[in-house]
Image (cartoon, rainbow, N blue to C red; front, side):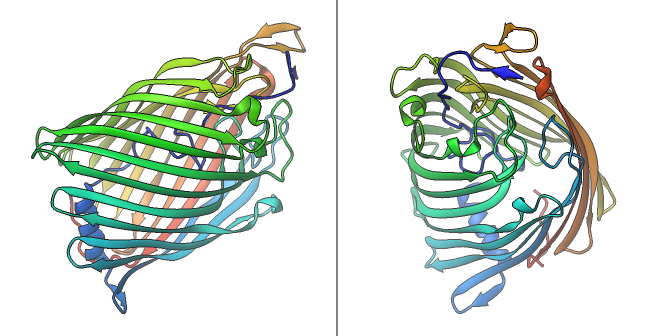
Amino acid sequence: MIRKTGTAAVVLAVLLAGSSAAQILTETPPQVRTLPEAEQVERELATARFRLGPVRLAPFLRLDDFGWTNNAFLSSDGEVDDVTASLSLGARLYLPVGRKVVFRGLVAPAYDWYDKAESLRGWGGTYSGEVLGLLNRLTVGGGAERTSRISATSSEIGRDVQNETTRGFARGEVKVLDRFSVYAGAERATTRIEDQSLATPGLSPVSLLDRTETAYRAGVRYAYSSALSVGAMVERVEARFEREAVFRDNDVRGTLLVVRYDRERFYLEGTAGIREGRPVRTSELYPEFRAGTYGYFASFFVTKRLELQVLGSRRPEAALFLDNPYYFETRNGARLRLALGRRLAVRALADIGSNRYVNPVIETETETIVVRRDATRQWGGGFDFRVSRAVSVGLTVTKQDFDSNIGFYDREVVRVTGGLSVTADFGREERR
């Protein structure tokens, strides 16, 4: 076990682009190809073929995370195997107003189920609404979203907890020249986290992450062609916590480069730059940082049937570990997908990385001062099978190892998860 050095207060950094549903700035690109806003809306409207008056609907049914894990609470102190499932039934809604404005919404109630971990059972879901204006040289939009789901807080905690997020946002981009545009946006999110399972020794309760974050960003973008665009962005994130605010409130500023390249066989999206973090009130437990961060996703079709993906990120994450306000999480990995005909595809994945903490603590077993370092490894594989244009099933098996220089925090997790997706997209699929 570990004992703390210094005050009992634990300082928490702003969450920048981690796994928690509440993080409002994500520099890691989505792990799929994305479309420009206008093209995305056009495709969504084309596939939303059901109508309720003027509203177009795209209903769906998803059974996710149906499977087994050997360590439901993701702890090193004994393993608890469990069977899990998550069922979501809902619809995406679209209301076009003329040719330039569209209202988009999502209604997706969900139920999360665990066989043994009864505290993780419950209703939740995602509900959102957005208005988007696609004018001649101006794209502008705003909306709100509320999400309540069982999900992981971060790689430090690992185990699933109840996450509830309410957020609002507004953004706009204007073309100054044919190839040059400027954009700006603001976002505000409130997070509430609840964990009814046993707390991990040496870590503060996850409810200390309850907070309100406000982000402002602005940047420029230059399109060399329809395939390639580059840009630069500045941002400011203000994090204000519900508990121990005097120690944990902080501001983070960032300056980032942004690139996007999109061709049929090769796709790349990424960011890289510098972030600086400071506590609102001076605290010895919150060392200021100035560090490089990045996030990237690339997809390359080696052949028509074989796709190689590489992805990674480096970013600061809030820490609940003793006397550590944050750690730097680094992940890099690869994915392979091989299509075996029109319906079946097999997948393989591998990731390596680390969590590097910032403040030393005393390791009680050896009575030595150490700075915690966790090495992470994950590998696995699975398959996807398309039953029809609207129905698909899949199965994934993964093994994840955490090897810490403080042995108490070593852990190994094996997951077997399956999924079923039923959508109302019966149109002919387009290969990009």
